[in-house]
Image 1: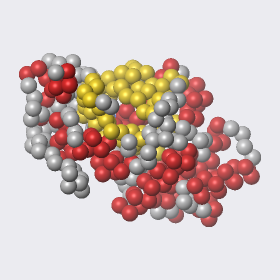
Image 2: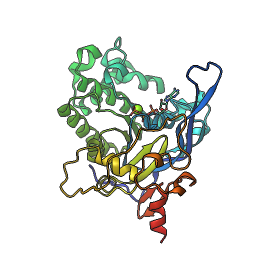
Image 3: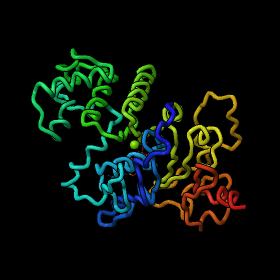
Image 4: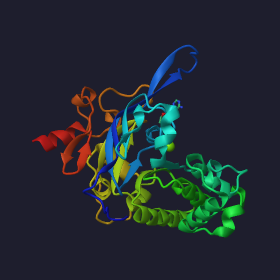
Length: 334
Ligand SMILES: Nc1ncnc2c1ncn2[C@@H]1O[C@H](COP(=O)(O)OP(=O)(O)OP(=O)(O)O)[C@@H](O)[C@H]1O
Ligand SMILES: [Mg+2]
């Protein structure tokens, strides 16, 4: 992980009370609809040059959250400010003007690239959409981008089907970088790659961050990956944020009971990491009918009556550390 070079500098990503509710049909009842709170009142900030790792079990709302940040999915409510510009106030058709600041890289590079386009066209597509450039300029920019991501001119006329998974992901990264964004949103970018290729792609991302002062939002279910690349970690459960803090602290000294069981469920090669909490209990509740108060309370080994009543909000409990657990909050108040 790189040291953050710009700590005193501005916030690059600001998210305030973001919600995404889906109206879903209830099983067997064609007319009845329920509300699924995929992202529920999420707020956080990321500083320039920093990587925020977003972790949580499947279905916790990680992808929905980051897709709302790029307006690939329309949020239900809330405010998103990227590089000082409130993108949630723009109409969808005006979004292209400001979308230059943020680009996305998806999990499956093979399916996220158009199989009928060659690498030259794939990488230069966002570029051509944003500005008029000559064919010669386009080619020379693509050659530079290919070199930046560890490929070369030879790859320019190849099609995705002729490339390996790792090479495809490098092309997807080059494509995202083509319009010089300040923020990259990476949704499980290495999950479909072999471990050795995964390490190379992570190294590439670190190099690019260093060279271009990029800010990353990095979604992963793999704590080891998040630990290696993220400065801060944010833990989600049923659409809500449970804990945010410096990655090493969140991994080695988790505060929230959910983070404790999440960390316990993954092997972390660190002899100093002593986690004594019991493993996770019970079945995950339905996202359509989450428990009142803290959504984790029905599986939480430390739950008290008040957890069902408490209005769950993330609060500062230590320097640079935020938790939504009322027990953590109470301890910090006393
Ligand atoms: N278009 C949709 N319509 C209805 N529900 C949706 C839709 N997209 C996502 N959901 C629901 O929202 C919740 C969050 O889904 P999301 O894909 O964001 O989770 P995730 O944390 O990215 O999971 P994974 O780790 O499996 O990728 C889930 O309960 C999912 O079923
Ligand atoms: Mg996802």
